[in-house]
Length: 207
Ligand code: AP5
Picture 1 (cartoon, rainbow, N blue to C red):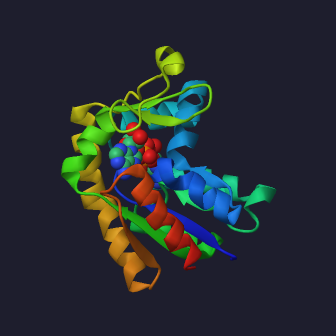
Picture 2: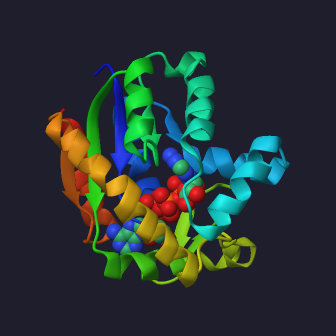
């Protein structure tokens, strides 16, 4: 399939968790704006310094910063056959800018009620060596690596509320925007990681 796929959904819906299924099935590289921004923050670049305050308070980073980041990333040769966007676009202006530089073939929307989001995010842990995402209850890490797991700075209950508010105000309307264009494929994200994975797999195979 030519064109790019967008993985869409609220914070903590399971986009990062399910992305590898889509990468394995399509061979498209995953582009996560959240990961790109966190890398800039940890390197202390100018962009990272600008993004840090927004991210730590749970607000969206300004569109122009994100669009510039994506434009640069899409110039790399591995992006020529389409990519998997994870966490981008998140606003209608971002989607409009994307339309001008690449073709989006499908938007897989992982739908999870707000009540489930807080516990998913507050319990999330990451292995800094492999990047694998775990959860203290829903996907516990093996005992031998538990000591090295880290928690994201924005994974607090207070910040999650701000991230959810930003999602409802600025990102959710984009789901309708893609729906009007016939690109939105809703997936029930409220089951277990394995159940959601099967639905994501079926959605990709239907393309
Ligand atoms: P970003 O890193 O994109 O964060 P997010 O969208 O808030 O998404 P998350 O990474 O938190 O969640 P996810 O859906 O990947 O869930 P995961 O698979 O980890 O963005 C961070 C910040 O950067 C933003 O707040 C913003 O400031 C900025 N930013 C990024 N992109 C931007 C953009 N385009 N425009 C403007 N600003 C931008 O799963 C979460 C947890 O739940 C894990 O512990 C996992 O194990 C568990 N889990 C997953 N699925 C299940 C399941 N089915 N059942 C139980 N537990 C589950």
